[in-house]
Length: 389
Image 1 (cartoon, helix red, strand yellow):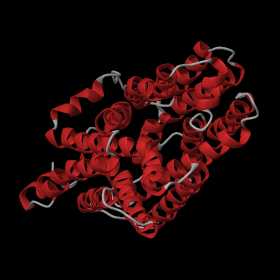
Image 2 (cartoon, helix red, strand yellow):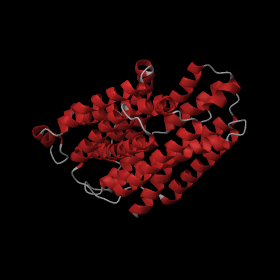
Image 3 (cartoon, one colour):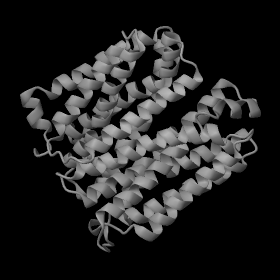
Image 4 (cartoon, helix red, strand yellow):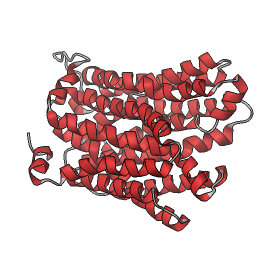
């Protein structure tokens, strides 16, 4: 099948999923005011999506190993469309929460999309496919918050309907244009259990990769939820200035990942090591930065490190998984690990570092140091290389 067409459809599927995730963020305060929610209810509303993904991602990914990638993508995207319909017309907190849970449970299509890329690429071209998904992540996180703020007209109905319409378009394109990968064509002899992917947990290298991903997402989610407070206290940035700063971050990420998507890299471990090292340096820089120009320079380093880890950690995981029948489940486990980190990270950041965000960023920098140091040890580097079994 046409690989470029498949990647385009997967790009749209993931981008619309992330648009929906980001869409609710800027209108949460207005929703809270309208429904008289306390801060705990708002927290639950925001965490519901990630909590649901934590459960659903490995299950949907594993089901795609048995029933095929395209059917699971269609089912999950249909759930997203329905969730936005519920969100648009929700008249109570309970219905809002139900819409976010439904979207999270069916949002496991990201793990299925990653598995699809593994199916249609080899080790040399896999990083390029993962970079395409990275671009869709960045675009989704730019458009989502912008749409949410722009479309809010006193109610959240218009924002929900627009997000639902965009997701419906992605669903139609999936049905019409996407074909099942050759490796996943119907095989009547296949008998894959939904929990079969758990066997990979016996592999120490895969456990280590998931641990790297967990720690990376833990500190990133802590940064993500405290950064606006940091810029306010450190530089006096208001909401408008922070919006432009986040736009700068998103645009820089798109440019960097767009450049990486043009390159095929077979040695992924050095790229992961470099990404972790740059991210660690960036967190350390944020803990000491004193001027706005220096802030912008450090954020460029941060975005480069983020892009490298976002692309090459799942590529590394796919290369180390030798069980071709559990690709979807393993990719789902990867997404679930990230979802768990996204739940814990903000709680940890606000609980431990709220009084000194700079100290928190310094701690984040040092937390990453052991991981990239270990990866430069020759003996260990040979153990984790994708070509080793």
